[in-house]
Image (cartoon, rainbow, N blue to C red; front, top):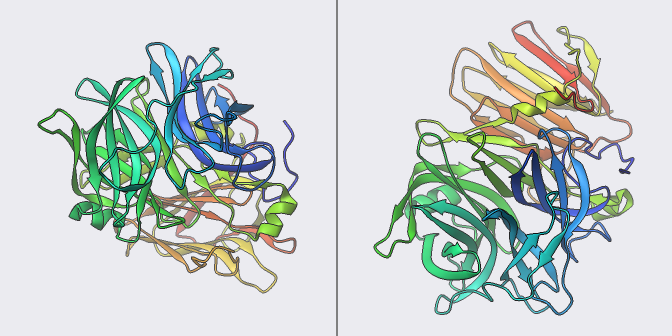
Length: 466
């Protein structure tokens, strides 16, 4: 399929050939393929006229784009947009559960269904009547969107992101054992919970895109996108699901929690609880942080991150690593850089850095002499990404990012770069997603000072199917 010739355009992550993309939706495994849907305006690189785009993959590395899956229905409950949601197996029928909005929505959506009419999930029948027309009465809800379906205590339930008129964010829960007959089952968690307030902070007035998954160790993880009138950031909290007296689930938050991604260009997480492999896989949306006029010239906006395998450590904090299938994208022969040399870097690469003492690796150099660097300090347990000389148009700045890890004798980071998309993994403890746009006179090269650091890299190439 055709792609933008923009050098900052990612080529190995999920995005449409052109125009707008935002939230990942409905990651789903069906037959021998992974399916991933996403918010998409097929007409322009701006957020409006939102459809569901669709891509699929046999291996999480190579993705085929299938165009439009869901589109707004004239005079229907989704006439102004098919917003975020999930895909579930409903008795052998892949079914999309999503937010539909009308032209007067003001942040309140209906919950809509669509059923797949082919095994490739490329033809869908959208139901004309929503299963839930709007938020439950009596809660004074001012934000209501993004259904996520999961199983607990032998039944099927759904979460909805919400915000209330008094500024309290929450996650609501519905009984949807019958996908065509939903029953409101209370509040799963809200911003008045002290553990949630510690993990999520107090700026958000709504929690979007709620995602919930079980870990092999028995923990549950709740992740949300924090909304304060605009997209803010993402966060998670670990804990337990407990049954209330009426049988509905409640989230008992534990001590683990905090930012889901420490970068400034990550939002709207979406999780696949892959029962076949026993893994929880997570994607996020990375928005553009360059000026709108540059986006217009490029003709595209937004990209999804690489898939991440999510788990927890014993202390309840997240364990996050890139999906191992991404190694299929590595060139057969790796490259290294001797200390002090300058090794040219391709537009897309996978870099593994291990340091036994403090070391700084440079990835990009401006004509001013400023560098894009990653500093590893095993003794203090910190990884610092410094991109000060590469400005962002968003208001949250370019100050260095510090990713914490446990102090130790060695420290390893993984750096995935695909065009302007940079994903940094500090061991298995923290990750940061940033957009760094190369200018015409920037020099992309790998510089490794000292001898107490090992660097191995691979150019990304079309997948090697094995």
